[in-house]
Image (cartoon, rainbow, N blue to C red):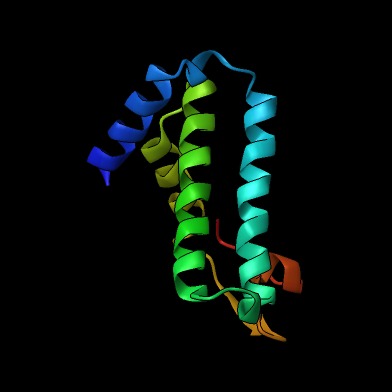
Length: 110
């Protein structure tokens, strides 16, 4: 994973994306995440939905890596921070969605 992140950052630097406006990059992120939504909601629209989903998730990751680089944030550091926030989180599934204890009205330990 670290090697791929490095390659994406090098690719973006070769194209001077690291100097571009992060707000525009954020729009790219939302476009790619929208493609994930499209495949999940209308899989029959795609000849090979599994490949379309793989592509959309990959493209979303690329755009997030570029955005983090533009903001001088380390992707691994961001993921580590997020994981540390959720690793001890408790909650339960409600109508197919995980709801953390704090949102259930129960004290959350993180």
